[in-house]
Length: 309
Image (cartoon, rainbow, N blue to C red; front, side, top):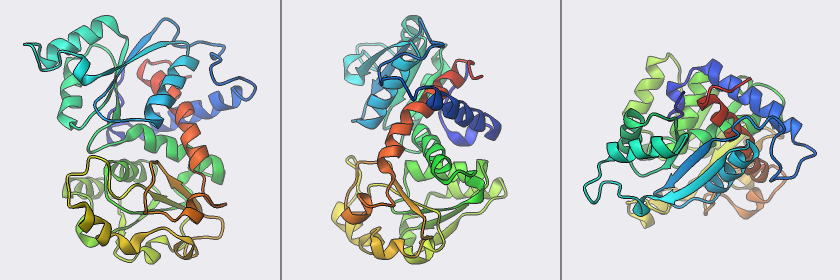
């Protein structure tokens, strides 16, 4: 049994095994319909419990499909539907109940501590569907998409992130250390990642490059990533934040600083951080990126259950 909480805590060789398995499984499904079960049904008889404390479209739908294709059953619940921390039931007690009824647990939450506490009290694997500091399933799938399109290891590519420094970027930074690729980050100086993130990079003898000028960050990039500047639950002065990022929009002028065959990726939902002509343009691969969530998440599940080939 293994957990999938933060990419920085998972060995690079295991991450590569997940990506390789996802590639094989995607190739084997070319003639199958979305709801068809994989022929080997590796998780037949398993029940995966998903709990959402935050809204979710792609994560919820892609994991439902991934679990179905692996032959397992799933149930999605909201935190307010449980006695979690209420009515005298502790988180530890809830974890024991989840371990009794389910074979795996998945959590999307506003609390890193809650994921940590669940991991200590569960007897089944836990997968982080999103937390304030990490979005591991999204970013590992993004690595898969980059390598699928570019047909080369991500370690041989120049990767650029332009936008807010958030949980998605934290996970991208973790993969830059694990897979040893060059990462340029374009953001206002006062929006850089927290010190514990950059300290971890230095401890692992890697380096990431920060630019207050998005054009310099995008220079010679093979891939440009972004995310919504103002998230739904951002507890900040949103008007000020939008103003601070005004010059960081990814548009056709900015894309000209990247390589001619550069691609654009965005985990969605989108906002004004990307222009319409880039988001819907020839360099955008956002729909392929979203679809690949299914394939990689299947292999993440198999990793947690010790069933990777």
